[in-house]
Structure formats: C-alpha cells, structure tokens
Image (cartoon, rainbow, N blue to C red; front, side, top):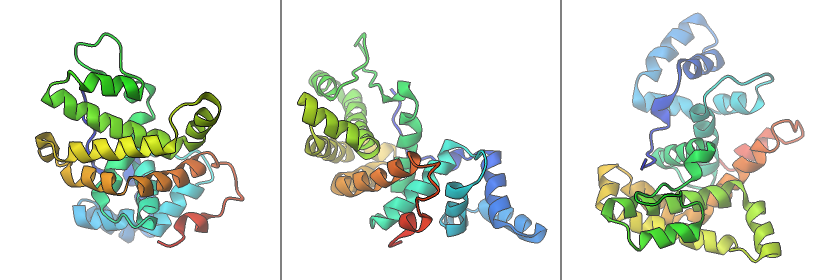
Length: 237
C-alpha cells in the first residue's frame, strides 16, 4: 500500500531544473544565480510561481521535455491559487495525485488479503468494513483521491454515466471525497505523513479543488488548440 504524499516538488529531474533555468535565466550570470536560489526551499517556491514559467510550460512550441511532476505542479498551483487555495503543500499533493493516477495501475486500490484490486468505489467502501487501522487510512485517502481525480479530470464521463447508465453523479463523488478526506485527516497516520492539514483542506474545499482540476483537464485536452487563451488560465490570480 502506497500513501500518496505532498512530495511532487522534491522529485524534479535535472531536465526540469535545466528547463527552469533556461526559461528564467536570460544571462549566464542570471542562470548561475538562479541555480543557487533553486537550492533554497523558500526561494524555489517563489520561483515556481513565476508567471513566465507557467507560460513556458503551457505554450512551449515543441516537445516539452519536463517531468510530470514539474508540469502538474506548475499548472495545479496556478488553478488552485485562482480558486483561492493558496497553500503550496495542497498544490503539491494534488499534483502528485495527478502524477500517480496518470499511471493506470495507481488508480487501483490494492487491499491486503483481497485477490483482486478494488477498482470501484462500492468495492472500496466494502473493503473498509473489515480493514485494520492502517489499511483503513489507506483506503480512505484512496477514495478521496479517486473521487477527486475522476470528478476533476473526467467530469463529462461521470455526467454521461449518470445520465445514460444510472451511475452515481457528481454530488456522490463530491460527498464521498469530502467525507473520506475528512475522516482521514483525523487519523493518527495523517500526522505521521504530514497530511492532516492537506486532507482537511481538501475535505473543506473539495468542490473548489474539483472545479480547478476541470480547468486543468480542459487544458490537457486542448494542448494543440492555439485558440485557447493563456490569460484564461491566469484570470483572477
């Protein structure tokens, strides 16, 4: 069982650093100074908020050779700030959720003692009934992450299934995500993994976070659409 943590920023690659420096360090002296500043956590975070970096990530003309961690952090940080969620650790956590869930195998809830992964929310809720303390925390955070990912990145899929197949709709995903993030935030393991305030924020601001991710999903589906204005993503920052 892997608990997703707010560690997206510490997984940047050398290529990510090179991209940041080449984007923001116009002169050799500036580049050297920037490299030094990136080693300082507080300064690094200020650099990552630079609008020029966001613009470069979104409008790079060729093949963007940066990691998922840099891409998702920069974009998620932007849309969450726009939604009024200013805490960087929350953006870090949500970006890491997107990184993990972009791999199909990480969307599956692996429960000890269960032969097959719990792929559906009702299976995860069923598994909670007999789960021990640690497994319970893992399942609840997974339910929250699962609900946020699907309602944030694939809202049209949820609406389609609700309308034509009678599947749970958006309110169900929001309610389930909020409830499980809230319970997980009070778990002792949330303190151990430094997730308590992050999960509490996501419980309180689940809908706002979900709507912010809808913007990310729109951007991901429109990477080749030159008509999608950059200023739309920056609006109200």
